Image (cartoon, rainbow, N blue to C red):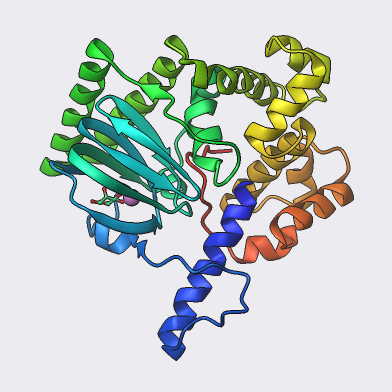
Amino acid sequence: MAFEEVVILAMRRKYREYLQKTSTVWPKTSTISPVKKILKVDDWFHPDGFPISVERRDPQEQFEPHAHEFTELVIVTGGKCLHVTGNDSWELTAGDVFVISGAREHEYRSLIDLRLINILYQPQQLKLRLIDLPSVAGYHALFTLEPARITRQSTKKRLHLQGKELAQVLDMVERLESELLAREPGFGFMATATFMQIIATLSRCYGRSPSPNSKALLRIGEALSHLEQNIHRAVDQQELANIAHMSQRSFLRVFQSAVGTSPLAWVIEQRIQRACSLLRSTDKQITEIAYEVGFNDSNYFTRQFTKSTSLSPRNYRMRRGLTSGHALVREP
Ligand code: RM4
Ligand code: NI
């Protein structure tokens, strides 16, 4: 999934370059559906390049359908509207929280005094150390599963904060905002720490009061946590089904529909993502990287890598600049 998004982003970048060069329209026969508007990093982040920015919408005005070169964490603080993304739409009210990863197009319609906070961030630039966050099932539900669902399965509201939780998160957002505004020495560290607190709190909240809609996702999130923690070994399907409290059959079905791949394919993709990160950030040998991320055969690794990214590990390394549509990126 992540790599589909890498490719979509790369294609869209190409598409923009193409438009700039030729100033004609993209041929109708193209398989790419051009997004009308893509919000650019340069227009929405501080010129010093710090990869987090907060945009309050009080109220949110009508805004055309768009995608972003960054990820957007949205907290609805008042009013309501219809949130439209892809073929999907659902009503938003105060307390709703969701994540839109870059390549996904979205739009707000039928706005009634809608107020929200956008926390914009660039996962690849942030390179957060997630430490033990992937052991929180809600983290997967909110930051891995939800942002990725482009057309798969209907997306209904899932994380809804109330009372104390909402107040707590809004408080952290205020602190984040004032750090970003003051930009005193050390603001980057402080802002990143506050942002980490926000995502951890949201991940925990997701698990605390699961709405019927979020329960299945959360169970899959638990299975993903387990897979993450055991990324170097082969995990048995029955083991996963037990964690998700489902039969093996329904676990596989629900997993496939939520994640879009089988558990094995997901594990391979995770390993490949780690490999990508190592290829970009280190000069380690490809064979060494293959073993490090959990493959025990480097030819098999190269085949899987090429299948997933359409680039050999060597070529990938040469194009370090590629960004992914991932909601959060870990350091290797
Ligand atoms: C808009 C709207 C969009 C967001 C931009 C940054 O007003 O909230 O969704 O991407 O701001
Ligand atoms: Ni947006």
